[in-house]
Amino acid sequence: MDLFNLAGKVALVTGASSGIGRRQALVLARAGAQVVLVGRRREALQSAVVDIAGEGGEAAVLVADLEKRDALSGIAARAAEDFGQIDILINAAGVNPRESVEEITFDSWDRTINLNLAVPFFLARELVAGMQRAGWGRIINLASLQTVRAFKNGLAYGASKGGIGQLTRAMAEVWSASGITCNAIAPGFFPTELTQPVYKNDILVGQLAAQTAIGRNGELNDLDGLTVFLASPGSDYLTGQVIFLDGGFTAK
Image (cartoon, rainbow, N blue to C red; front, side, top):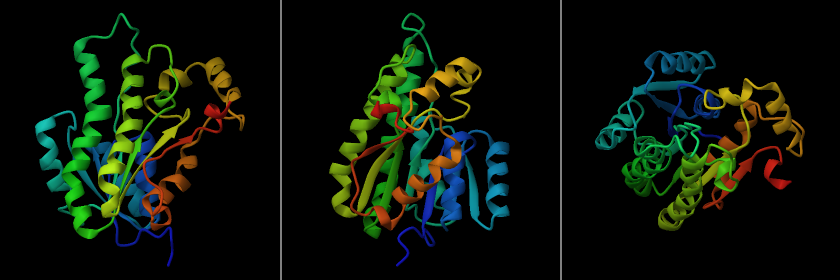
């Protein structure tokens, strides 16, 4: 048995139009999964499909606005149209407004908590029945350094990602007995659209790299091994965990 072969599995990746979500979709396809890419930007999603097909993988586009709560059940149903029942869900979509305490509004607070915390739960709940019938499933959430650390201008984002840590444990408690593992990846600093404001400041980027044990910030390919591991049979006995993929940032 190949513990890390995803052939025959179908994955749904939110936030797949760029950054971490796009990279995770690509590496799941490399491991043999058929992948449904979810996001709002059709052109960016189709570009990812072309990249996956160029490596011999299979992927499909599902354009959707995850912020519309009443659309989540329809998104889950549409996700199965191309390749069948979803076996692996990666909740990579998210937003980080980087607002000061004074700048936070009710609307910006609600948007951050909804997309970063509520959507991963409600989308998973829509998909979990099929996983239960199969007796196997994977849910991978995206946590953050701010799941356990406080950052300036990160109050709403930090609250949402702190919640992801507990949500992941709660999901594992509820669903893992039926064969569905639920874990989270907490990335350090990686070059993505969300971190563009950070990467525009070379001094800050250097300071962040110096705070890691390894001595550098992350590159998107650093996500590959952990993503495939958590999605594969190789992680059958691992659930309810938040794994910090941060070069040792939180170890110091």
